[in-house]
Length: 114
Image (cartoon, rainbow, N blue to C red; front, side, top):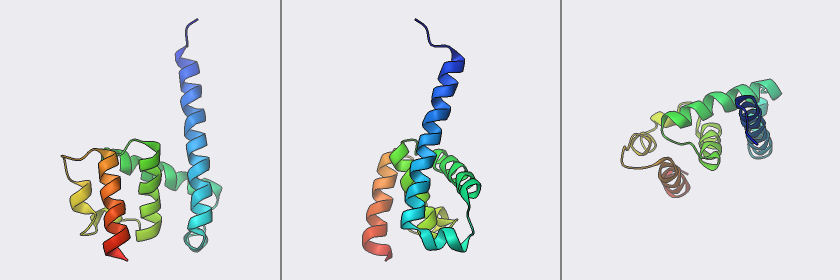
């Protein structure tokens, strides 16, 4: 038995849709005021998730959990949070992998930003 490229593509699309659905559900629950203020409907939320997940990947953040947290940071701190003085050095650190960057961002946000 051999898996074809078409089957692999279908699997990737299904996995991406599941990821989007989970992230969108979390955003609607945790960031309802932000979603409402920006009038983000289903297609709008999907577009934001795709765009921000791409930005996360550019920083080496490839895990689903890391990408989801990165998206949450955008909803919590604003669209350009990567440029904030506490976030930029972490995201720009070549010695950290994606999960380490998310862990450090989470720690700084939890104890120093609020």
